[in-house]
Amino acid sequence: MDSTRKTPSRADQQLIDHAREHGFAVTGKQLSRWRRHGLLPANTHGGGLGRGQGSTSQPVAASFDLVLALARLSGRGKRPTDLALLMFGEGLPVPEQTVRAAFQAAVDTIRLPGGAEPGGDVDEHLDAVDSYIGRGGQTAVMVPARARRVDEQIVAFFKSAGVPWPPAELLQWDENLGAEPMTPQGAALFAADAVLTGKAPLPGIGALLRGMMPGLEVNPIASLVETTVRDVPHSPAVGPDDSLTMLSGDVRRILRELAATTSQEHLGAAWHAARHVRAWALDLCARTEDELAAHAPGDATTEWWISRQLPAGLSLLEELRTRHESPVATALSALGLLLQREQFAELDRIQPGCQWDLAQTPGILPPPARAFLVPAAALASL
Image (cartoon, rainbow, N blue to C red; front, top):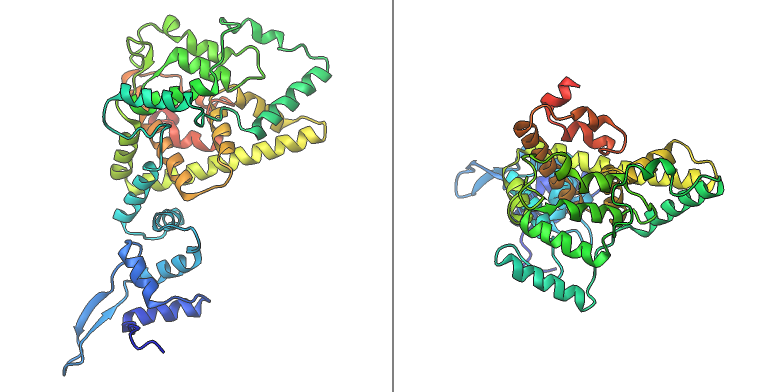
């Protein structure tokens, strides 16, 4: 027997016994490690036992539930930040500082091609990204293979049914027929620019939308974005360079600030909204595949096709790019939803009377995100 092994305190032994009663083997060493990472609060000190027998201590009440969750969730490849996020998502009383640090650590995983980090000269960063792409570095996956297969099957079904392609009804709504879609290389550079500056030129967004819907030779939504400045020349949300101006500076810095300042209640609501959006996207894709396999396109196929041509389609593609759900991916999606909600609230402030009823239109927003994203006052008026 190892005589150097430290005997757990009486308080820690209570936690070890509690875990054992629920079928988990926990050691004093594990308890110490979880405390070092801020996942488990320290025991509270009580009074002395007297006559040189030391002092008493008791586990914090929350520790009993936390120990069971940590024993259940811990495993190979699970980092302390993963455990913090997972337990927070389950509504467990993880220390607030630990939760915020875990969300910020998720932001730190955002890496741009070429290694551009927050701060420094934006042009130099973009040159590094461009050089990286030019050397054959990884580019953006604009349409995941699974989504592309579904799109192709829908188009094939239309054609087999004798429906003219592209649909004649769409032709009149695209004022830039024949416009070049963005390439994966261009999308990688465009995304890097947007992350570093917080801005996105409307013409670039239009080209990006065309690139993300390669099977549709006409794209009315891309056309609408491309002609926004002409149709709404004095919008406060559009800057002099025809860029959306709701953000300023490196988006990673903004996301870190959100992680640090958003109330835990809203962080939790965003976390659950992000998970529901993913469940919606995967379920919609699976139901659409089933309908197409049965040669009977129905409600799912209709919802897929509408969503793919409207903003909700961006969420579809994003979730299909992420093959396996992870705490980090969910945290980033949650912060993205929080950022979008802040932008909506700001837009509602600077341009009252926005057509928020459009948020209820199929394809505009992922259904699970509507109530979370639309400003409460606007939602109440619908």
